[in-house]
Length: 229
Image (cartoon, rainbow, N blue to C red):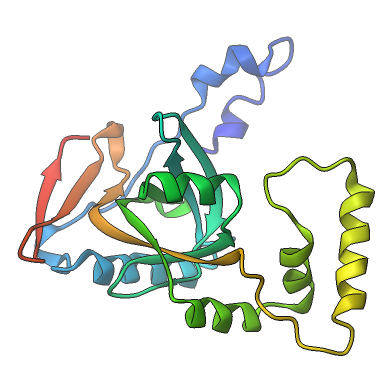
């Protein structure tokens, strides 16, 4: 039963603060069969990611990125996956942003994908490194021109007086590069998270979910282990 239909009669006279504990859906799936999993988690991720794409989910490449400050304070935000290969998972951002500073001070980070319609989640931990400048420039050149201008105009994570100031910067940058290709700003580029742990989670009935953890070993091979939900 759809959750919102099931509680529609309860909402009147009650706040969401009172009802949030009742937010509940049952996850029904066929589970994860360990003998059908790929030996490499990147290959397994590609199978799950393809399913999310083919299911026409909105923003299947959206992922939560968690970083920490030098003194261990965590911060998180949702970014977009822009590539993955044998190295790991690639995204792009402003190096001078909050996440950029935190990555430079502590390169160990985590990303999480959630495809709720499929009852699937993938958690990844590892170290983050910048992608080569030529690779970042190649991706930057593929972006829409408006996004390229925005990368120049935004001093990401820094205070701004108002919206008009941002829009004025956009206009100024647009005039500066009028009729010319827009180069990649030096403080903008890509990061790749090189995984050391990858967990595949699949929702099942009665909250007895399936969890399979891949861990990278010193010999560059991966082990797989089932975890309790």
